[in-house]
Length: 194
Image (cartoon, rainbow, N blue to C red):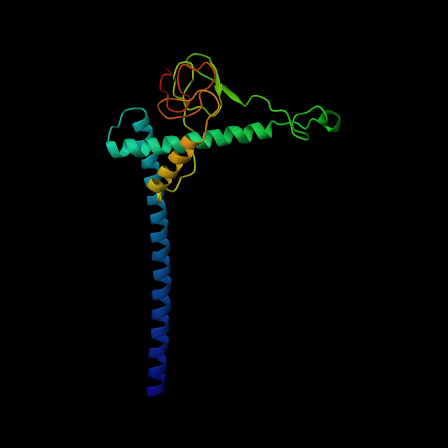
């Protein structure tokens, strides 16, 4: 009898431990899902704060510094997207034209994509945040979250890199972005061109 009682207790204990393990895994999964939802909400909150700060509706020194950092990163991203689009638009000139071409085997580039400003009708670069003609702020597309870990250190390096490179053509006196020809306002930060 003692053996059966001991075996039954062992079976009950194993059943309890298995049930406990299942409930723990279920709760751990729920916790991870809640943490994921919280990270998404923080990302959305950051995007809203950045948009409000860019529009001048939210004013705080720390937020302004982060907004400037984000603007600089967006400007670099815009320039990289423009370079990528220019590369996509390249056309092979063929072997017969290689002898005449300055860079054999390379394509001729065309103007990048544009978008029409709803306020003034100006044909602005597709990656512009502001209309270079009237400073209308274009709708900001949703982007994947960017890690801000070590942003302060990277910021100093980016500034050093940007100041050592000689940009071609006029640049914005406020943010340093390359200006569109005959622009009245910066396409990145919306500042008036001097």
